[in-house]
Length: 418
Image (cartoon, rainbow, N blue to C red; front, side):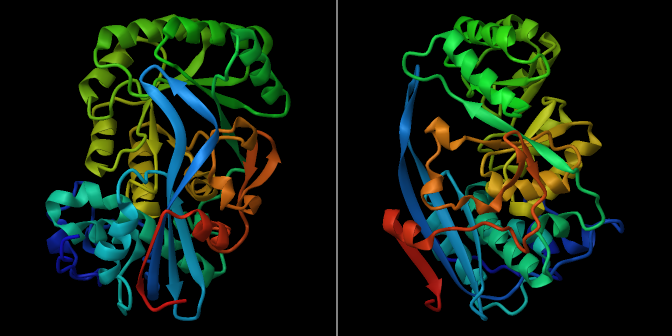
């Protein structure tokens, strides 16, 4: 890893380095008078990170390949009194865990005054230099999320209340369940499974398109034949298209099935194509998965390329970055849909009035393996399809650290041992 660049983390002298940061970054001096009060980042004595690959119970087969595992990155920050803050993500194909402990940690551990939490992730993302901000942002985001967790514990409040201290949260937030096609599935069998989910209270279901728009149409038609008409359906296209004609043809084929939005029709940098797709179909467009560039997320909003911005605190600048992006989206009339990792993103959803839902793979899906180390108590449900606002101080994320250690492929630490 490269040497850590000199960064002023006090929050008072950050304006000059941030001139090189993406447009989404802002210094304390640049905040408007109606912005939330500053929250000081807590002092930490160590940062630890693990790379945890876990196989899927049920591999998912696409035309271009097969998912067989998720590679999770787990981060823990320890305060002087022994309390810990935690966060995790699922983009371990990049060495984010090593960026945390080798690149970010020297600018955090033992520092008396880290400044305001709100833009800390953006300042820390400069640790590799301005040209690598987007590559480093996932690591800085996870560290920032740990510190928000500690700060909310200090305040004795659930984290969402620190993100939106004056807001009245919704009584509950819909939970979008992701359902994959299974071996031997017919459209009718798939539809019956979705209808059973709706009968248990699920209000939104996301289905995958496996690069076969006609087959997806058959599954959508089968669902509409047996599920309640109010059930929302989202189709995840998985960045498969490169030209507008193929995307528009598929979108128009799905129009009769009242699709709430098509997710990731193009790779996210294809802003022009997404804008053209919105004009070519009545089906709304959602983009944002795995974006690490705040600038790109803002361009999607500014160019009216999305109806729904997918927001991921673990890649887009932590909770502070998610708060800024959701505010910008709301100002442009764009809804938001937080990425997976619902234990963490529930705080974004309850702090953001334009959040459409949380997203989960249910344990029965066999397509999510983080439950090997993430205990279920962080989420409270009204029914199978709606989450209640968390009440525990901090993020509420409850990790089994013995399981993390047991499954880890790699572990690293910077600072005092536990």
